[in-house]
Length: 382
Image (cartoon, rainbow, N blue to C red; front, side):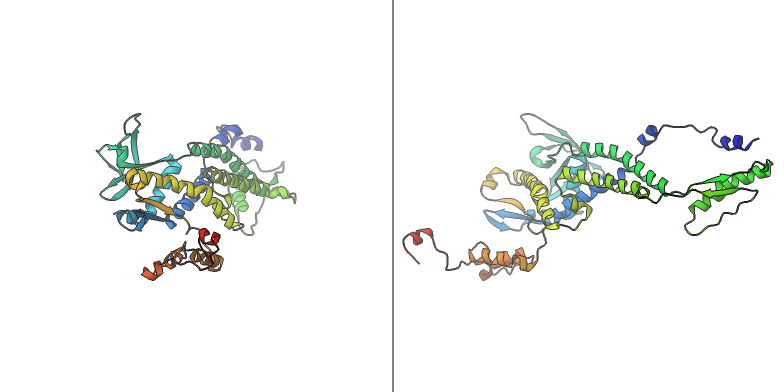
């Protein structure tokens, strides 16, 4: 048997597939989409957890059961931080989230069926919480139902992943191919055609060459029988790293598009430290604050209702503590707010993340004598 016949025989029985068919079956790069989504969930949920839900009764801030549930413990098994993370996760992956209110506790539903009605309250049934199916049927007024305002979010992200997974895989393979060792093997015409010679050649191609190419350090490949291996040289060009660079750019694109869909500055998802202050401001303005308003609207209409809300009994979320600021950067602002009577000593302490003193004098508001009513100024006072 000729060497060429034996060599081609190694491929007998193996079907060939087109490049398009091969690329179309790739799913490994879904990892990058999930990484971008999880980074977004962490950023949003951690920001909500760092915020403070303030509860008011008749216009005065109070700390009762509602305040505790929203800020500390949602139920006997779930902290408030975990509760808000579950809500954000459901909103991003499912575009909706159902919360059951029972015995002054909140429970996030894993699955449910929603029946929409035109002139009656919607109803919710077949609700599953922690693998337990509830037999009860709940009305709209008895639950908290959050529906994500960006209906096309997941569709857009999945579409991006379908296209970019192909590009990332091709770029990775191109990079590996450019870095791989290549060479030619010269087989003399008088090479032994015996069974032993053929087995030695098969062992060389399938085993010894494999160990030689995969060696991390120095390696020697002994050749006998007149065989000669010639390594092909590589062009010293930026093309050697082109595949790796393109792959990173494709991954960055996925993060950028996910960030764009969620109104998050891409630098926050990718951990860039440049211009962080402006990125955080954009995040608060275009992503977090609208989301918090969306959440508190549902809390107020279901937990309090119109009558109590109009009586200034409601909940609101303070996101001012999210942005870390240096004390000297806000000292002047606190001074001004105190001088015009907007802040008391306790208000300033809370703004700094310090426990308020909760005394009569620390709650007192002050105003500088330099200020006077407009009427007094017009009358020539002062």
